[in-house]
Length: 123
Image 1 (spheres, one colour):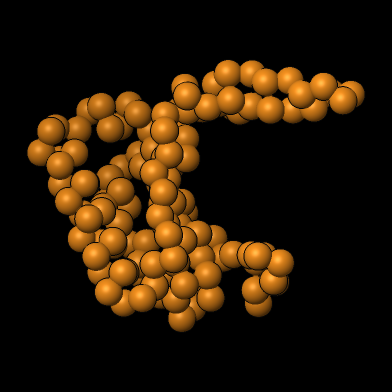
Image 2: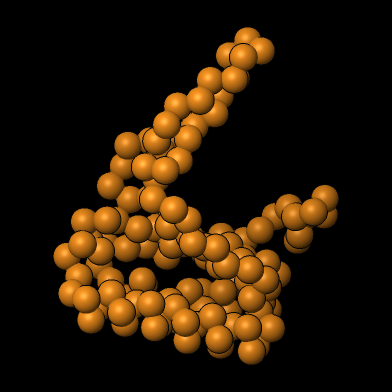
């Protein structure tokens, strides 16, 4: 089964961390990636740029309209994700609990099953 493990970031929370705490998060992600690569569960992972570098595209009539910045004003934003292929939901939750962000108040780690990928419905 495939699961998307989303990392929800709050810049104020990250800014309040010490350099050592920030380094520990980076090290923790490195160890987590090594573990799920070794187990064969990692499909891919991506870290996203700050929302200030994003753009929102909508089409009105036939003309695209592009607006700089995030889609919504919020304290939190999607900072990245892991796409994993594991045995079941319980394993995906166990993996998510190993991500260092899960231990920091104000950061979020969300687990959601993938239902559709590459033209195939996953059950």
